[in-house]
Image 1: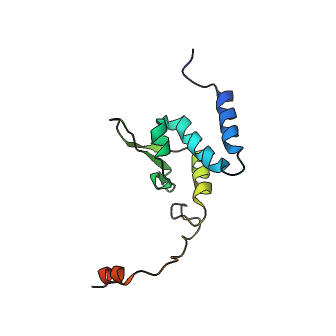
Image 2: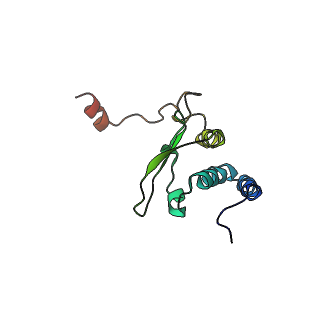
Image 3: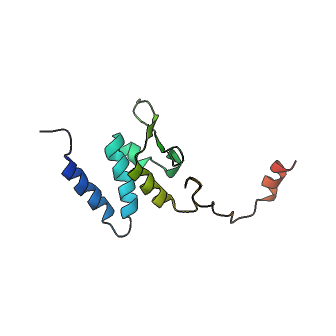
Amino acid sequence: MRDHLHQNEIDKLLTAAKASPRSGQRNYLLVLPALRHAPRISEVVDLRLADIDLTAGRIFCRRLKGSVSNTHPMQGDEIRAARTAAGPGHPRHAGKHSPRPRTTTPSPRRLARVNP
């Protein structure tokens, strides 16, 4: 019994993750870092776009069960997948596009905190 996947098995897994017409990009973005950074399933589920720094090309791996959380470098295909998932208006889109304009007006309470 072996403890790892061969490259052709990895390729098949990534192809299958992308194949979903509805959420293939999301699946690919979850599977690719899972293969590269070896998190537990609960850590993959806890992964958020906010944990990805597209400007620096790094992903923050929040570890559970007493392990040490740390930052890992991302490879080009991971960064491209994250940019696609984030969308052009996302502030972490590495400056390629301007962020989405604010759609709501600040509440009077919030304005009072900003302008005392």
